[in-house]
Image 1 (cartoon, helix red, strand yellow):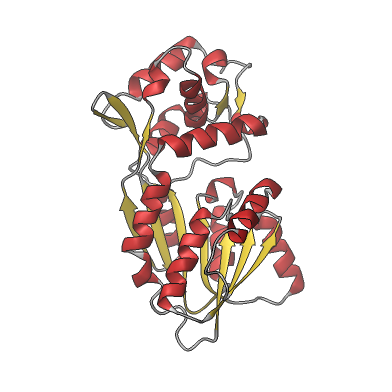
Image 2 (cartoon, helix red, strand yellow):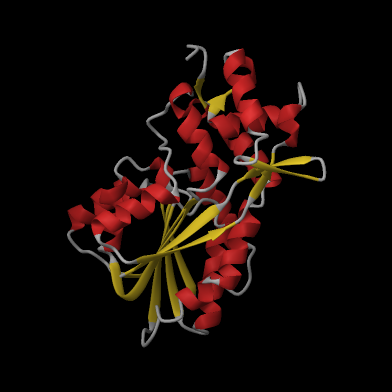
Length: 292
């Protein structure tokens, strides 16, 4: 591996910008909203039965867009019931955006919000020290298990916090996505960062089986338009390359043979589909629902 290649996580500003480009060029959020519309109401149908308050724990809640969609489904299911929504999020920047979103969103009167600026493992340590394990009715972890050092221990801990009829929702890239194939084939040749794991729903379901936990897994198709990656000097394409490879300035620092191999593969059917002159990378997501 060329020594000049470094992880995208080493440059926070560039990571944030490349992530923004990814969201703008992918159907990631639309895919999540489709799941919320089609599947979530059935999943949360029993979580608040006979309860005067519904407790929701969001791990890695980010800027809150998806959290608020989840809350609105819970409100529809349990009109007028108080909801206590606690958010664990390590980025102060994301928490500030989440608070702004809450401030300008109507119909949140019966929801109490609390934010904790910490990682899931910091939260875990703090809760275990207190020795008072509060139970939750719904816990969700959206696209965040990549940033956890010990995934089975994390799953076991948060599962232990589920109350009666409670559910835990995990959203991750699917084992059949282009990501899974990209990481498997090229992971060892890209700069690693101890901040981020290459984990897909295939690894996760194996861990859940080993832990003996009961779950259901739903896959929804999502794509990312990576056409700009094949236009030399295109700024958007360069940022999408960075996001795909988790490498800072991939185009400028990657060995030419590595770039050529990945560029060729990204246009192959197992990675992407070609439609109306566009190259659409398979960004499919898995939604894993774990029973208490």
